[in-house]
View 1 (tube, rainbow, N blue to C red):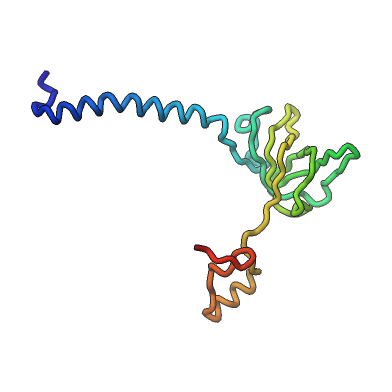
View 2: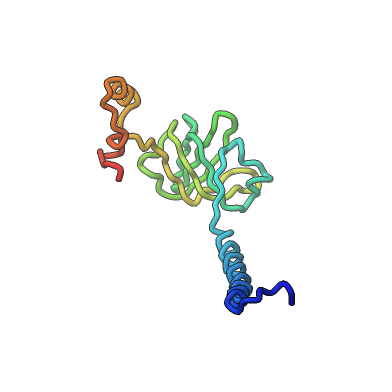
Amino acid sequence: MSWMPKSPKARRRLWVVLAVAPILALAVGLSLFAMRDSVTFFFTPSEATVEKAPPGRVVRLGGLVEIGSIERAPTGEVAFEVTDSVATTRVVYQGDLPDLFREGQGVVAQGAFLPDRTFRATQVLAKHDENYMPREVAEGLKDKGEWRPEATLVDGASES
């Protein structure tokens, strides 16, 4: 065995590495295998093709709620269109919508596409801008040299 180190200490280290490496590789492999079901991909309506988001696969669909597209059924089901200015996707949701949900606002819906390419949402999240201050005010403060980025967070909370 000419490839083995001559020092007993180095030989022991080599055996430890050879014993630990497969166990570590197995642990990483099992962790990745277990997490593959919890990964949720995000698509816009123009990116959500049949190849990327097949029917039945849980994904997130994001874009703007198209103006004039919200339809409410007496059963509590809500249908609306999500657009990214290139393509539009019909979304159907059963449940209570967030307070910030409205036409022209950003939305992220989690669910799956049906075979007819309608998106059946299980969760709807309304998106909003995290900046508390209007852009014009922030630009005015920058011009005056009084700009403090940490002061633009919601409710005036400072960033730590």
